[in-house]
Amino acid sequence: MTILTTSTDPQHINFQGRYLTADLIIITDEETKESVEINITTSIVDFYTQATGSFELIDGHSYRMEVITIISTERYTCFIDNMFCTDQVISEYSINNNKYTEKSVDKKYKIYE
Image (cartoon, rainbow, N blue to C red; front, side, top):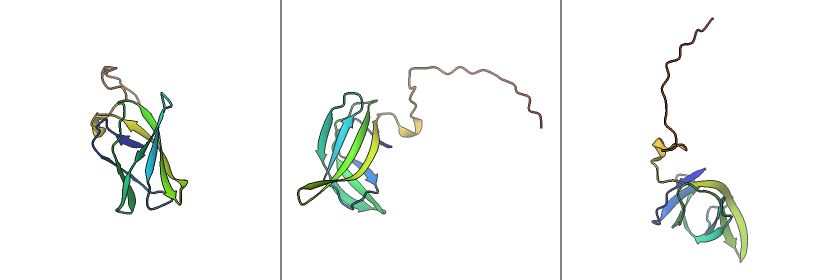
């Protein structure tokens, strides 16, 4: 799963696809089912293809991402993945952010070996 932010600045997506280059990404919002095509640039970075593009994403939404390579006017699917948009710091991300509070309870267990 690829995780991006709501920033409209260029963001990078690394993948290993069927082709070494790609021309566009089709992003489909899983909630609204709306699709948009975004032109991208690609480069090779550490054995991965790195796609760079500007995305307009909604915080908390999941997306289906399809990377497309165009060869002689024919479109070929290069890579498919799920994508999630969040502005939370990834190492601190929780799907329950600010929705649930944690209660600490002391539990004692006996383990018999």
